Amino acid sequence: MFPAAYGIQVLHASSDFLLMSLTCGNLLSFVTIPLSGHLSDRFGRKRIYLIGAELTGIYTFVQFALLNTAQPIWIFVAIVLAFIPHDLMWGTQAALIAECFPPRLCYSGSSLDAQLASVIVTIVSTAMVPDYANRDISEERDKP
Image (cartoon, rainbow, N blue to C red; front, side):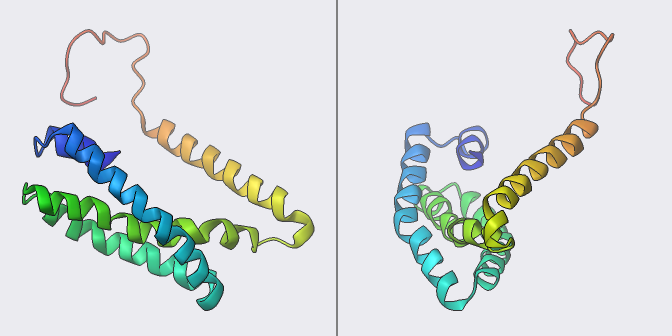
């Protein structure tokens, strides 16, 4: 949970306050996730998913601006509002992925999609990690 870590380490906000903000955001999701599903039924899964992705990219800059005020009310607003673009994607994603496959392959295709994505991300991430085998790791270092 990036907002909690950033809030504690950089903004020096209380963990109780940050967790309460995240909880309020999750409560908002009780409305926004089903609403995004409804919107995707009405206007199309791809359209709503892309709107959510675009808003997420844009809102990232707004969120950091609000967080960096270090004012509790703006931190709260920044955290809670971040759930809206996220939920536009989350409430649409399952149907969007399932509809990419014919009915007889829906479950298998969705599962294969998720598993392959997981494997690919893992391979890419692991390939970027430095290898410290047979090296002294007892000292602190700035760079690998």
